[in-house]
Image (cartoon, rainbow, N blue to C red; front, top):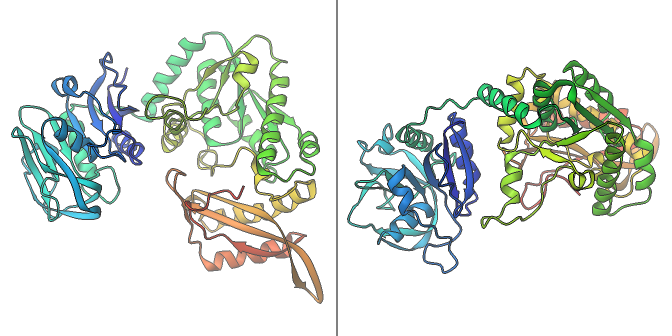
Length: 506
């Protein structure tokens, strides 16, 4: 078992970011609700307390008894976490007058303190709080200040307990990585958690968990399900059967290309061409939610049908990843939304779930795929929505509309690759709008379709900014689409960010 850091989540928007930073330092960590500390886990080396949207003196604020933790292991409180430790030890926390938000610089520091080793006066940190610590208990010692915040960081004397008023996990805290790294040193972490060690441990656990049982896995062609397939194949070989359904809403030639890729990986894959079924059931349907439900149910029906052709299946493999798990638990430990990738299947088919990636972030899944020797184009694929082009065709879906969108999208995505832009964006796609406009081609007037191009940059899909693609590229792609795709005479580029817009249009 790997040693770990526990992050107690008090509801901050940046809790996942703390986890990612710690993982980037080859140290395994888990995020748990503030009141769910695993006291009986001997592998825990230290604990980090996250920020929170609450004030420590709010009646509804999240509270936890830290007395036992503080005697057992190193503790680091961040923002609310720092305020909470001080407040519950007899210090004073008050509203800051004006919200302290944005960049600040360390004006003075105790650089002999192990938490601040390598940090220098003038280093930039990121503040984001409405309250501030105005008085610390007698056994606390200030170890850093900024111009505006006297108690920017403190240590509890006689304990391995620290608090920082700023957010070291945020990119703008330029010394933040150093501070978190120093904390891992204080916790005496070995930092030996790597993709290779994850693969070795996971394959061993899968062999023990599954034994000689059979597993079925729904493949989407995406990163998560592909990496799960290769991991399971490594553990149980021919006892894994993968099912890949062509719902007629995939990208151009994707069904054939993905099956070819999977054959190279040595996977046992059943490919099902179900285009006619889906087009029939979607005919005339325009409501986005209804389209999603029809596509989801159609997939489950086909998957169930194919799975019943295989004898004695006991397990369903899924590409669930860590953000899914975190988002499906509220901070109080109650479920907010279920995250079965193929909702309803495990219950319907009476199967047990196996989710080998459930504790990995997306970038870690890609690192594991690389370590497994998978082809770069499979690992670096952009996320693609489950309902596929079904939610990129606004309005009703027909085979002709799918053809138009596939052709336009193929020119756009291949163009991104040719111009070396594909890996610089998080996700890109083409949307067929229910808008026809007048155009001129040759000497004739046309009245044809409009497509919108969308490309966003993001690290986690929670927020996304529109990608500032070069004008020359957009001009080139627009010309290509209008000249080569019959039925399109206008191309627009979407420059909305998330929030307030979403990545997809439906």
